[in-house]
Image (cartoon, rainbow, N blue to C red; front, side, top):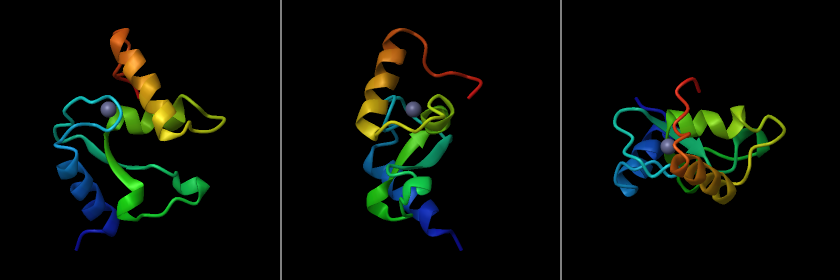
Length: 93
Ligand SMILES: [Zn+2]
């Protein structure tokens, strides 16, 4: 049986039309469950708190901001700017 966050991830992927919530690129099979409020900040595995993001965007939100992940709106703006500059995705993330 699939775990709740997998079901929520699948729901989010469909609702987003297969587009990553941050970089707005097609995710293909590389879909991760992004907690909008991070688990470390008390975010739950509820449908309303889970969006679908590509692996790079999901990893980057924490890896690039070790002092604290930016809120989703700020992070999306960052990712879109990086994309415009040709600096996204970061393959090693
Ligand atoms: Zn992405």
